[in-house]
Image 1: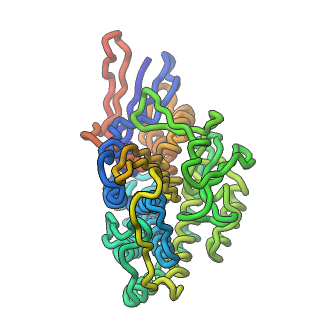
Image 2: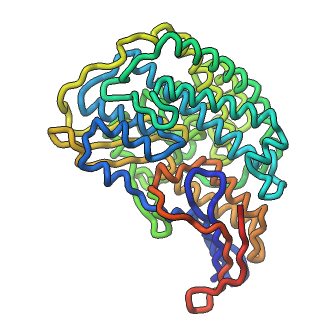
Image 3: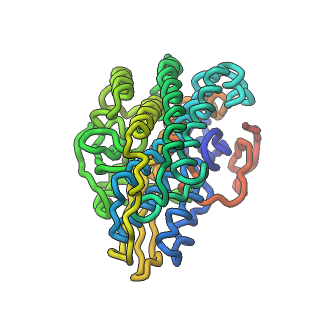
Length: 467
């Protein structure tokens, strides 16, 4: 048996590798998406005060800290029995739109676009620098619209990277009129960029092989009466053909989700209680909802469905679905900032002691459904913590997608640079966030090793450096 290792997977958040086993004929016998980092946040939160969870959990990741911040805040709302007032809810949603704008723009333009625009370029050019050289206007617009996301996060969340303003019962401070006016001007400019970019986004994917990463699963995502939702509503589950399988809003998620592990990865897996696997994130949400809820995104959704169908299993369709959500977030940010209620001063419901000993906060992070589940003692000290992130829920699909591509592109035991990039392209489509799913220890080697079984642990017969 010969083993190929592609490490690290590039243009994702965190460190991961791909392990490919070849048989005696040099054909792919099996392949896995492999994460060798240690998860830790669920343990060291134990013993802390529950009101600190919204402040601590954003440190899990610098890419999607807002998602953890708001999910943890929603869990503490339940524990203290404090439903946020309407303005507090609007500010949290605006904070979430900032997260979507920043994260989706980063992934689509800077991480995924090079696969479509620069697929045949040398590895050193197939990145954001190469993108800036090939299409400077796209790179400039991507940076500009990401700035909008960060400005929203800073103004509403208190800090541009790890927000702090979402607290039990709402938000710690209101949005001033000056902040509202400044953000609205930026949001309108960002929406113009997003509209123009949709035409580019559709063209980027023309002629690409969308059969790569084939896998069939169920899907899970949040919706509010059929409308796309990111911070309110119910989480729905649909089967492989779109048939309804159930829904949940809180701790009843355990009626549907099971977590488990495999021996080749420290990253947890998730499946339904029935044993079927499922996916979350942009593709899942667009499979589930009837409408986006904003005019321009509704039109983009119709175009997306004309290309991929009303219900799609296509892994690479995640990229197009992500852009539809990016456009929707830009529109929704403008709507929220035009609402006079956004500068209201009633932003928090006062809290007393612990009302219930368990709180579950569920939101739709850019990468998919995020669940924060805390149990506390009578004094509000955390006794148990469980975090289920999108990357764990998509882990099975990434793993099977890797094997599908490996079987298609690796021939005679040779992994070319182009083949390695196609494997990574499928992983990148899911926009995995390894830091959200694990806590990193150490660094991973930047090489591909081909080993021949010699009975003594394997002999390295070829080493290839990768970027």
